[in-house]
Length: 231
Image 1: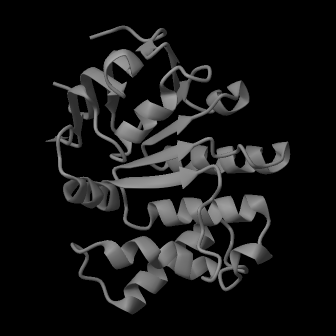
Image 2: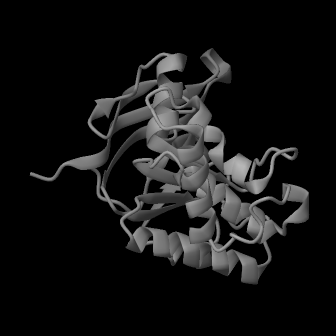
């Protein structure tokens, strides 16, 4: 029997109430195995950002269930969701979200400071961050501030940061959206290499060139999956 990393059943999300309510997700069913590289696509208003927020434990569904790595996270409290985010999810955002006053290596170390289940020393956390920056080919820029790095370099720092707590899944939200085509291709090559090494990656994108790097593409329309068989 396959053990799924992600198992979503009958997921709904409604914003607002009464006549002003908007149904962003309409009974989504989805399964992802550990080690997959999945792209989520859809037009504006299709529900893909809402689905990404729920996958990332940034929001809770109105109905249905979401089991992540064997744990039903559908109705967890905000504090419990924060714990899951820190331990199991690595985020890569379109806008990088690096702290401007911290060097690259300190930005990468940041999530480890909030990992209450980690018993590593400061030196061990530093060496972990250094190793990840070396893995994304930024060993010569680790002490530079974000404003001293190109957009592509900042996104590589963000990817290293996403990996620092060894998450179950990496969620990349329009990871090439602020990059030129060459830098964007380099970022997708990096994500593909990470996938080849065993990482589970889910990316939200409106660009077919980005989605082509994934091994499975899920299309949303009006809050429903239109290119995946329902469970």
